[in-house]
Length: 168
Image 1: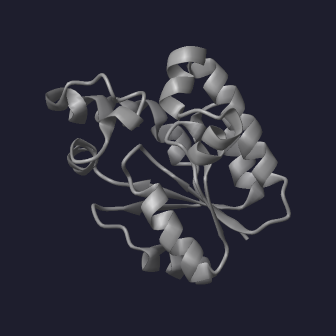
Image 2 (image 1 turned 90 degrees about the vertical axis):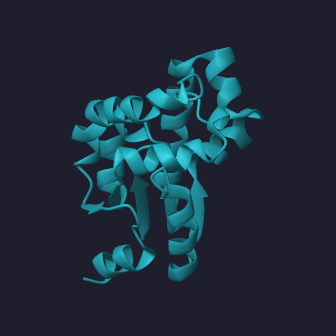
């Protein structure tokens, strides 16, 4: 089984993904970390030195590689991954997807208390404008996110919520 977690930056994809993979006893893949390993540099450096278009190309190739692998896994995609280069189509035919629909206000709170510099599309945003930027990103991406097999809405999405949908 291949499980894809999609949603905005700060929605909990990596945190929940690790827990879900452990509960299912399968591999956890953080797509951004896989890209960093392959490229030998941080995502922020890729954005800064090579540009977002290059990053999206690498992201798509890495996603395709994992989708074509025989391995079962839980993958935390990057927030923009489903929105580029037919990646959502690939996700839909390769496994089951969950949209972690966390309110922008909660995401802004989480990001303010984390390493915002690690998030290239949000790093330059003033803290007072973060919620507005996240709402704008959501409005641009929601049509892709809504294509997920399941949408989970709330500030405190739990692994059990996903496990119930998988077992159903």
